[in-house]
Structure formats: structure tokens, C-alpha cells
Amino acid sequence: MKKNLLTVAAAMLLGSLSFAQEVAYEEYDLDNGLHVILHQDNSAPVVTTSVMYHVGSKDEEPGRTGFAHFFEHLLFEGTENIERGEWFGIVSSHGGSNNANTTQDRTYYYETFPSNNLELGLWMESERMMHPVINQIGVDTQNEVVKEEKRQRIDNAPYGKVIYGTGINPFLFKNHPYKESVIGSMEDLDAAKLEEFRAFNEKFYNPNNAVLVVAGDIDFSDTKKMINDYFAPIENHAPKPERTVVKEEPITATIMETEYDSNIQIPLKIFAYKTPSMKERDAYVLDYISTLLTGGKSSRLYKKMVDEQKIAMQVLAFPRSMEDYGTYIIGALPLADTSLETLAESIDEEITKIQTELITEREYQKLRNQFENNFVNSNSSIQGIANSLARYYMLYGDTSLVNKEIEIYRDITREDIKRVANEYLKKNQRLELDYLPEPAE
Image (cartoon, rainbow, N blue to C red):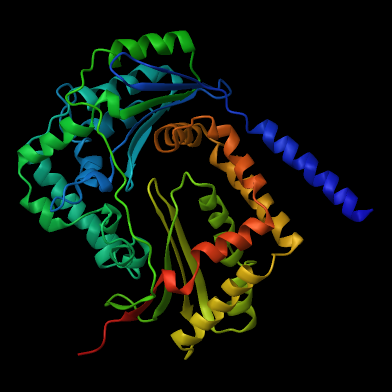
């Protein structure tokens, strides 16, 4: 009877979460190719205006890495109608906030304003697209900003090369641009001419390579008129970029490597795997596996290695789903004199269990509940909804996943978890990395 009550309660929870998560939206295209997605939520007087461009670090030319991330900074410099250095002041003085971020696959800009300033947000993003000022003083200024960011996040940050993949991806990818870091090479940026930055802008920062999302306290009719006024006149400087996925041969023999970091005192054992595109169902299954192994203090590896065996001070994982391929990084920091070999053996024991035994029904239900909560939280704010709508359209080619993606997770079975672990987490298909403190001279 108790089991039946729990089943009923779980079903009621799933039903209520599904109902609460429904995101209504409307989408259409302007004549210049700009895709527009609108979401109305009048529960609070705020609105997010965002633009996602289909350009990331994978789109850069060899020898000119870092351009996509550089533009994340450069396009805040100013426009023909926004004076240099005034962007952030305009936003804050009108009660707003803004930010941008770059990945291997896309670049995303957004502003959130009180809804009576919707037109301001639309104007600013149209200015960024139509009238950016790309000059030498802006390039020089942002070059120093990016160098400082690299120093803080990677060069001088403990385990920075692991967190940002710069010490791992070159071993997993031999041909694909994912082998390069998003922040790129400072030497490449130093060597680039002003004309190259302008050419990059003309190639990628066009309406036909972007999606505009407006979400929040809006009126559809008024918003469409403003979008038409500000964005319809923008012309494309280049055809929509054509992309072909650079094929990577599978890893067939374990890659053994050692990296050194002068910023750390405690070594780190790492296993890294190449995984499928974010659009493939198996990528979702790997999300389950990552959470099962290292998702918090109740995960298998934390309980075993930190709590019970006391051989690790921390376990970690960095699953990264990307448009063409993904990576899964799993590792542990030793406690006291524990060897990295001992950590490796303990991690492998748990991977083998997943490959040979079905996870328990209790673990399975817990995973489902965790991903239900994650799904709800991702769309619990206007900013989160705007990001989701842009991402699902741009990278997955299916905006409706904003409501339907949870069904993919719900459809995953315990048998799927066992199968995917066997397919992607093989010893001969991975990088084994000893990440060590820099030896004393």
C-alpha cells in the first residue's frame, strides 16, 4: 500500500510540474531572416530582450582563435548612436541589467528592464546589430580586458585548465575546433588586424544568423510593431553561414597524459570522454549518469570515496553538451596520501557497476525527480525562459523543447543508463589525466 501511495504521489507531482512548466510563445521570421520569438507573462512588470547569434569559438579560423568571445566584449564598446563607454550606464539608469556570454556554439546578449522600457532594449540590440563601432581603440581596450579575464579564470586559477577544458579538449579532439578554448589565444588576438575583426562581424552578426527573443510583460501587437521598426530595416552583410560538422575519429586506445599547474597543491585524477551531440538522446542519458555518479553529496562517488572510504576530499564532474559533440569529465582530489591510482580504481568500480547492473528503482526515481526540479528552475524566471527559447531554437532546431524536453528525460529507462555507460564510458575511449602541482625546481 505504501508503494502505491508513493506512486500516486509521484504521478501527481509529475502532472503538476508539467502543467506549471507550460511556456506559451509565438515565433515568426522577418524578411531579412531574423527569427523572432515572443513570450508573454504579465505577472510582473519586467521584460527581457535577448539576441543569440549562431557563432561560437568553433567558427573561428585557425590562427585566429578567441574572436567569438572577444566580440562578446567588443560589441559593448558602442554604436553609431551610443557613445563609447555609455552602454552600461544607459541600462542601469533605466532600472535595467544586462550581460552576455559565449560558448563553443553561440553568443548571447540580453537586457532586462522594467517593461515600460521595452523599446529601449529593442533599440539597443538593434543598434548592436546594425551600427556597431569597431575601431582600433575599442579593439585595444577589450584586448586588455580579455587578457585579464584569461589570467583570472585560467592562468592563475587553481584547476582553471580543467574547469575551462583548455588542458583536456586538445587530447579529445584532433580535428574539430572544439579542441580550442573559447577564450582563445592571446597571441592570435594580438596578431589580428582591425580589418579581420570587421570581417568577422560582417560574416556572423547578421539578422539571418540570429534569433531575437522578447519575454515578459508585453503586448504582442505593440511589440511586433517595435520589432518591425527597429529590426526589419537591418540588412545582411553576408549569406547565412553554411556549416558542416568536422568529423572526429573515435578514440580506440586510452590516452595517458600528465599536466602541471603551478596554482595547485593537491593533484587531481581525471577521466575524460568524448560524448554525442546535445541533440542526441544519449546525451540526455549521460546527464543522468553524471548526476548519479557525482551529483551532490548523495551521489554514488561522493558517498563512497568521500564519506565511506575517505580516500577523496572531493569528487567532481563536468558534463558539457555541445552542438556537434560533447565531453564528460569526471575526477577526484585525493585525501592525505591516497594515490591517484587508488582514486582511478574506485571510480572505475562505480562505472563498471553501472555497465553491468541496473541502477536501483530508488536511484532511478530520485534522478527523475532531480531533473524535474532542474527543468522547473530553468524556466522559473523571465531571463531563464528567454535563454531557453533562444537556445532550443538556435542549437536544437526545435523551440517546442522549452515544454517537451522533460519528456525526453522521463522516457529514459534504467536499461538506457546501462547501455549508454557501456557505449561511451569504455576505458579504451578516454583520456586519463594526472593533473599535478608544478614540481619544485
